[in-house]
Image 1 (cartoon, helix red, strand yellow):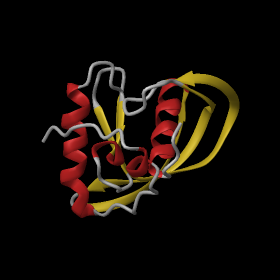
Image 2: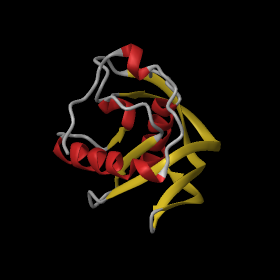
Image 3: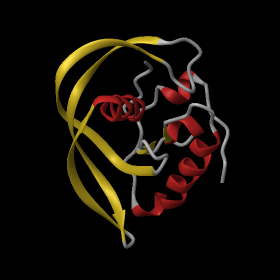
Length: 139
């Protein structure tokens, strides 16, 4: 289901609760919603008003990828950049890492399976942005 974006700082600044397999419908709502957004590349659940740690990002072919409970383990190659956000009016100056290692859960056959993976460049930047959202950090 396509959901409206939430721009309320009070909602966006709340730390998200841990996601469960029961949040699969929420993940689908994120996929449906991000697909309708012009220039949308990633979306976190709190951006549609649900304080759960579920995020979706689109790869180069516009294929969606869902992460449950993502956490940044470490990053290398810190740099300053200006970043926009679908739920914030003004761009923000942020520090992002060029390469990151992330742990997250993936829904497989109705169960969350723990994963650990490296990401680089634009994908790493999107994932860091969404992790910030899950932590209630307003960029």
